[in-house]
Length: 274
Ligand code: THF
Image 1 (cartoon, protein in one colour):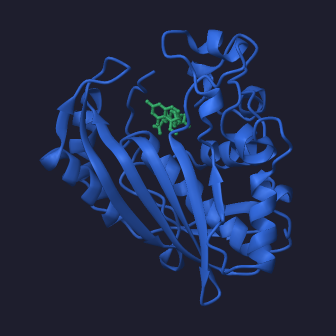
Image 2 (cartoon, rainbow, N blue to C red; image 1 turned 45 degrees about the vertical axis):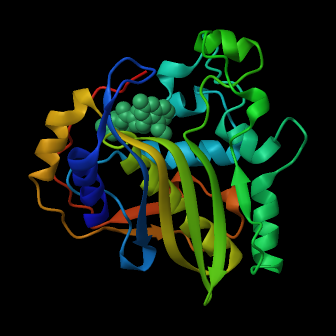
């Protein structure tokens, strides 16, 4: 994961000191791109231990179209707790937009699978989670927005596109805002896994995952953690094994994934900005 370390170094060296909504302060750059060839191994950061379980359950939760954190909590995943209302609702966030845009029964994922199987040269294979009609009013609390039918938070990984060439499926994500220390390792693993799952069910090999950023930032209270992480030597990437029997993108279960040869350095704790 040289790509990830290069991003950390780039932001430390070139970043602008910037205030932000959460009041934490960041070092930030605008515009950056990383590319991961998924045939070279599964892109899980090795210079700190990542919690794969949270990543897999979150992705399965998006794919279910679910926007209540109950399913995540039942599976021991806490990463969305801070933003949910008292009923566990986040409003129409990722899962809702992916599977049921504007309550219009527009299932963007289903349409992409169809297109990948029947018209893989299409240049229209995009999924948008960015829906201006449900963006929250920033003067209101997360739960007030949810009770008004708005999303608790605007999506950070806002839209993505698929591309097929040489029998390989690639995916590019545009992430408008990226918490490089905490969120980005999750986001890379999540979209890499999603690309592999889509490739399997549509009959392709996995190609590249391309990660394009808008505002990519390191929070000021993650600087020591980043220094520690950069002092560590990246290790060989693990491999992701998926149950080859699964042929429908909506049929994957947690048990269908097995990460092998993941030997990371120890976990590094960091506070999430809310
Ligand atoms: N807000 C901020 N400030 N950063 C984010 O990365 C982020 N997200 C989602 C929505 N808002 C965000 C939530 N995703 C962790 C990881 C991903 C999150 C939120 C929190 C986190 O705390 N990770 C810890 C613990 C992991 C665990 O318990 O499983 C870690 O050390 O990795 C970006 O999409």
